Structure formats: C-alpha cells, structure tokens
Amino acid sequence: MTTAPSRKILSDAASFILDRWSPRAFEAAPITQSELLALLEAGRWAPSAYNNQPWRFIYARRDTPEWERFVSWLIPFNQSWASNASALVYIASHTVTVSSSSPEPRPAPTHAFDTGAASMLIQLQALQAGWATHPVSGFDAELARAGLELPEEYALHAALVIGKQGDANILPEGIREREVPSERTELVKLSFEGRFISQ
Image (tube, rainbow, N blue to C red; front, top):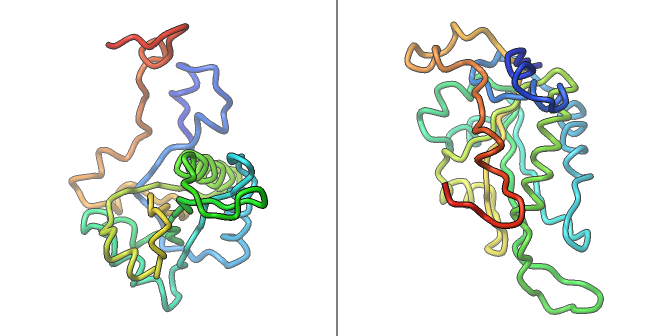
C-alpha cells in the first residue's frame, strides 16, 4: 500500500485519497484471480449516465499465459518497470449506448468520464487492500486493440498496472530518483466561482 505523509500537511482531503500515488517499483509478486476481481468489483459500482456502465476491464496476471503478451504492448520505458507488477488491466469503454426507449445505437457522450470514475474506484480499492497502482497511457494502442480483439465501438483509454510496491532501488537508475509522490497544482488555479478564468 502506498503512503504520502507530506501530502497530509498540504490538504484536508481524506487520507485514502492522499495516500494514493503511482509508484513504478513493484515486487514480482503473484495476485490471485479472486484478489484481482475484488479490486475490479469496486469499479463496477461507479456512477454512469443512465446507468449505462460503459467500462470494460481486460486483464492478465503475472505467471499466466497472457502476461507477456499484455506487457509487450507497453512502450519500452513502461515495460522496464511494469514487467515486475502483478497484473495489467486494459481499460476500455463502450462509445455507444442503447436503451429500451431508444433501441437504435447512439453516441454515449460520457463514456470516457464514467470509465475514469470506475478506474479511480479500482485504484482506491487497491490501496485499501494493500496494492499499489499506476495508470499509464504509454502503450501501442493499435497492437493492444488487435491483441484484445476490441470491437470498433469501444475506446481504449489506459492500462492500469497493479502490484505490491517494491523498493525504489530495483528501478533503472534514470527513474529511481522520481519514485516519490508527486504534488498537485493549487486548487485556486483549478477551480473558479461563476465563470472560467484563464491563467
């Protein structure tokens, strides 16, 4: 489980939010099917427009036949550290929706927003269960789509790396010093009352 004590000095947000950060150092530890599904279960309970639940989670666990294939779609930089993780979950969303009142497929404008909420719940559940997570966009989307056999009406957003946090010394030298929780832009620069203010 990750912790970020310095963040608690800077924010009134809940500890379970502040302690979540994205390490790259992972132990080469296994994760069972039931352990991983317990994390994905949290994502299932995210809110979505009209309860459409557009998210899809396609995963592989280390030491299984699919593992090397899933890792191979990551860019080389991400492969250098994510190959030690316990699971890789590719996160996709259905870009169209149908309903009983409108059976013809139509665009689902909030599919990405809703799926981001599901991903965040998985990450927070993982933190509570003692796992670390690191979402990445650095992968070959074409290869991943083909390998996942993802239909055209699905968007592929990110890969979520899940594992037990390891010692930073196992990382390649170039990224070892970056293995600390990052800070965030001040809220005053991100939130505005009444109208947007360009900064």
